[in-house]
Length: 258
Image 1 (cartoon, helix red, strand yellow):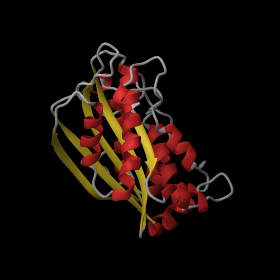
Image 2 (spheres, rainbow, N blue to C red):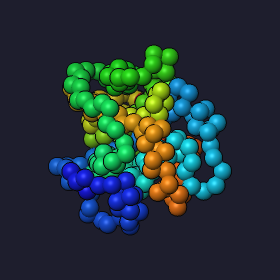
Image 3 (tube, helix red, strand yellow):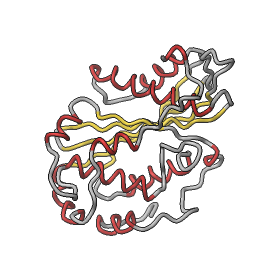
Image 4 (cartoon, one colour):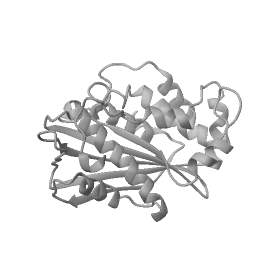
């Protein structure tokens, strides 16, 4: 579907088709790169989503609509952040992002690539440099985001288990705006590993942070809601849980992040 013009109904019909192995976007080395993910509802998103929750199996509110759209994109790509060494790799993540980008009822309101220069063996520096490049997040929500990215680092470290691994950090945020809801995707590949079980983390001295922000407006959701009447909705809790890579209990952990 990349680069094609599709109607909302055509997009939905394509997302409902069974996943076909090998359909993912190809990227050099992507299959070998883990893509641990974390998800967060920023600010008042979770409360508003809970307050607007509707009865019945189909998505009714704009929040349920955005979450269902995102989860359809995830499952069509066979992207599973709960399995970072399998279908939770970068190749599947890229197809997930392409499915989001192809949705004709989502508006791309911001996209950017930020080059970050940083070098440290302190895991907290990695967190701060990653979060510091986020745009459009209120200052009073930054601590919440820092905690979420900290969980992302710990998950990546636990799965790398002292082996030098490339990890595509995928942080997605849901937040409200006056027109509707926003879906933020941040990602960047880090070389990450611990040494001697002492929580020492190393990573690249420079990296690119990719950012894309999509909006589902209330007007757009009102227009397309009827075609989702036969879809099973994704709750806020399910979306957040499905997009959080677990930390392996027997894996390495950065002590400075404990």
